[in-house]
Length: 64
Image (cartoon, rainbow, N blue to C red):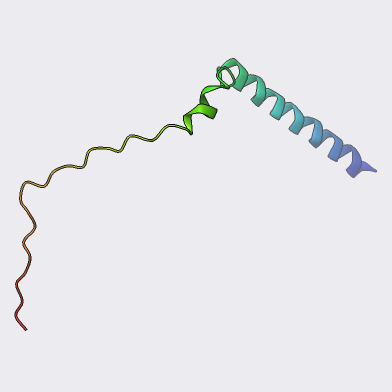
């Protein structure tokens, strides 16, 4: 029976931790913009410019 009281206490403590994390995210503005993430997947990502190599790579000439 004692383990039941322990498990109830642990579950209440865990629920309070998750509730605190939810209110912390709410206060930081995590849930303010719910429209943009759904639209963001529709746009292509911009590819970074590849740096240009000033010297072309030399190819070894091998004779068979």
